[in-house]
Picture: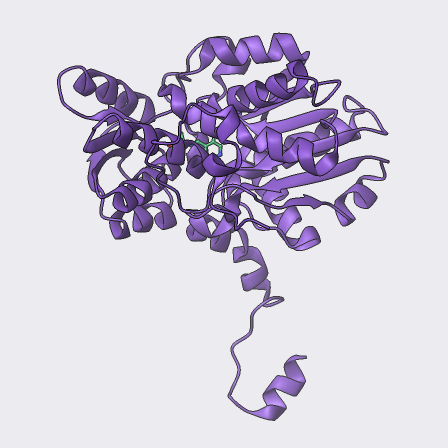
Length: 357
Ligand code: F0G
């Protein structure tokens, strides 16, 4: 059996590469599809819920799927610098794949609004970091403007190769389930990922690999929910900093996904996102970052309400690893810490450990 060498090699027949393309890979993709055991029981509903744990990609998020393609094509086209605006994960992935390719990554991030793990990654992988006194949407505009005159390749999801790479998650899910799920739930920021998934499902549907495509459901944080407002949001705000986006780049694509798949958008309060993140960790042993938990939090609500019917197979994408945002995770446990129910400080003595047990 061939060694797994990343998603481009795995799916090269479905991707815009040829035998001469210099593939830049860190072994991304092939992430676990985990069937939940305890949460369906707690919901009291007969549903099959799977989480696609994209946090186990090489830099800890789904962005690696898009970045292997975007950087591969940038290098093939002779580029020696890439640039992106980012709420954190794209910058980490861009920095890593640029390092691998031996080219420069410039990243623009909103000052003070990206999770610490992501900042650490961009620094360690050697990106040139521009913190702006502004938000992601402003950074995105700057990237588009500067790329018009400077020799840098934009690797945000406006780069079509990004979505090509990201569509492979849908292929993996289909191969594992032997069919498409009935519902696929994702957190939505720029809406690149929901559009990429739909592209993947549609390709396998059209070529007859599966007889149906899923209903696509996109969840946003209520402080950053342009798809619910029907218009861009000027000052997006949410604890889920990854999806703190007010002016989605794949606006039209996402509305097409909703229409073609018969799906919907909905929004969650920050508290609901955080509760879902903690529940998934405590009840299933799966630790994702806050933005990712919008998918499972939203799905649980729609399953409870019967909007997602019993008997359904549901896949939720967990877009990023929980370790990306240690500050929010520790904050989440503050109450437990204060109650003394989860952590005690004791003498380094057997009696003290016995007492604590
Ligand atoms: N979840 C996580 C963890 C993300 O980092 C992002 C986007 C999304 C969901 C939303 O995906 O934009 O395709 O709808 N993060 C980008 C970034 C914006 O810069 O890392 P989307």
